[in-house]
Amino acid sequence: MKNEYEYKNLLVPVKHPDDVNRVTELSSVLLDKGRVTFLTVIKKGSFPSVQEDWRKSSRAIENYENKITSRKIRIMPKIRYSNSIWKGIVEQAEEDESDMILMGWGRKITFRSLRQTPVENVLSHSDRDVVVFRNQDSNITNTEKILLPVAYEDYDYSKRLSLVLQLIKSTGAECTLIHILRKGHSREKVEKIFHGPRQYMKERGTECKTKIIENDNIPEALIQESENYDLIVLGPTREYVFSRYMFGWLTDEIVNNAKCSSIVFKEAELPWKAWIKGAIYGLGKELLNFFK
Image (tube, rainbow, N blue to C red; front, side, top):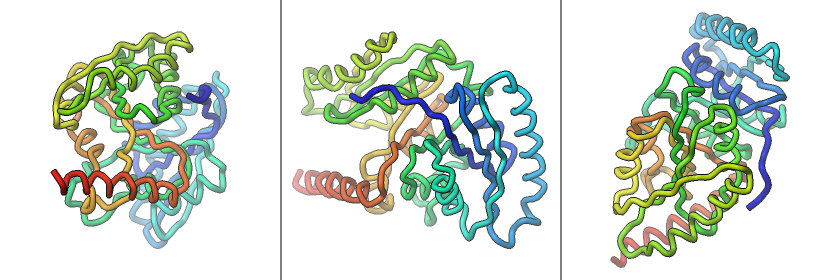
């Protein structure tokens, strides 16, 4: 696995005051020094309808800035006009050379959504690291127990683990690696899956617990287990770039129904590469299901 990562340039899109309250504390936890850009994207022609929320958000950002004056973090509020929210976010991240986009999960995303939300579009189109946060607690700093699902032996979890390390550093939380064991899979294989992430954390001074749950329904198992934790850290499934009508997205179901706060972390990836990998993985899975 690769070395530890340190973020110094965060882009935080805000639409209304709830977004500010949801993500400002997390941004201060993830960043020791650097720049946080709070971005308000206004669709052309819609400013009169959003200006009151914008004023409230600006006041909330000012209050947040006053809390961290002693730290080496620079706050930069920005407004961008765009034909769509998600394009404005992606374009601003490119202009600023942001190393992470941090967003709030917002409203519940359903399986039958006819239009993709800005969150889904940013996940699909941005070539930056993207973190999406759904807060179930008043303050991320209250986190004591973190749940980190790991599924693949051949996957490099180092960026996701670095994120968890930063959370542990800021909160003192403990971390449990979990794998959902389905029929036909061996426990010996799971130990190999655990080895890389566990060793990565150990080399950086953190001992992780491990847990195996036998269940063919991955979302059901993780949602039930989330009752015992304050935060679950997930990645999007490998076919996230496709419409849920084609393959679906397990992450939606888990985040929408988890009993604790959730972070979805998607690593920086060029969209065309994601589409190729998603196509191979998704089509392979569908073929396996077809011949069962």
